[in-house]
Image 1: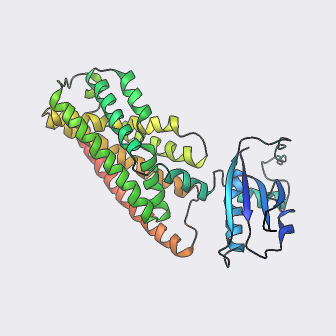
Image 2: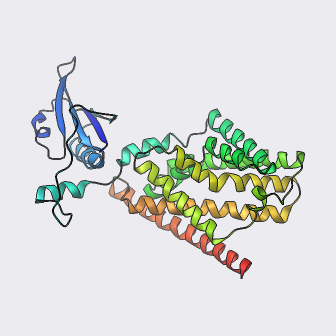
Image 3: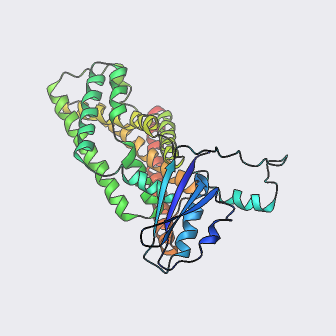
Amino acid sequence: MALRLIKILPPNNYKNYGEWVDREDVIDCWFEQDGNGGQSIHLLVDVELTESILQDLETRFSAHNDYRIVLFPVSATLPPQPPDKKEGEKGEPENRLDKEQEDKRLKRISREELYVKIEEGVDISWVYLVLIALSCIVAANGLIRDSGAMVIGAMVIAPILGPNVGLALATTLGDKWLMKRSLRSILYGFFLGMALSVIMGMMLPINPEVYEISSRTTVSFADIALGLAAGVAGCLSFTRGISAAVIGVMVAVALLPPMVATGLLLGSGMYELAMGAGLLTITYIICVNLAGVLTFLLQGIKPKSFRQQREGEELSRYAIIIWLTLLAILALIIYFQYF
């Protein structure tokens, strides 16, 4: 079971310290004196209960602005935390208190922790642009030489997951600021990758019959399934608090090679094949973002305030309608292409 440490610097003149000691959703609680005579409160909690506790804290301190709440990941604790209480024969909690605590479990990290993790991956920096450029160069060489190993190597270094998951989260929360940053990162990365690929297509001989290129010039229903799976896996890797490195490769599998293939074919003047590769790229973009929004919604991720919830629900509804409409159009294109 993953744990988190919540450090609370309460408002001035806060007196209700004892109320944290007997909380049923807190594993352990202790206090520390600071240099100014105040106290800080430390709560050791299950990661799946973090969001409900943070919401409770914000409600308690909503009338103040002189408080601070800090969340820390916990690698290990001694003595070790005992296993959860046994459940009844039908998998139900043994009593009402256990049922209430089970209802608070979100089976994911808190919204606040998730937001910070994703926000870090949507910023445009020289490192991000260099990694995009390097991954596109390596992928182009792998496609031209028909080397699957080189293509996989390119996908390992491609920082594609963060901006796409950031766009899905921004759509779910109705966060226009995060949406603008995510879209900007996606567009900068896309245009940089396409520009480099087109230039390499103009300078290098391209054989469209090699497998690594020819396999990415047509779209099938299997590609829709791959894109949806990549989107779900990418979002789950963040919400479960696990490493996104391997999942990022899966998302890059979907997005990077067809994008580079599109640029190479455009640069070499093979416009009909480039159109097929471009259609495959668009298919993956639609599927990854649609799956991301649906995954976040199904996990109960929503804005804090009522006004933000209304904006988030409206934006999510429009986004789902748009993505589904585009996906339906692509499905019709695929159907008439093969049938």
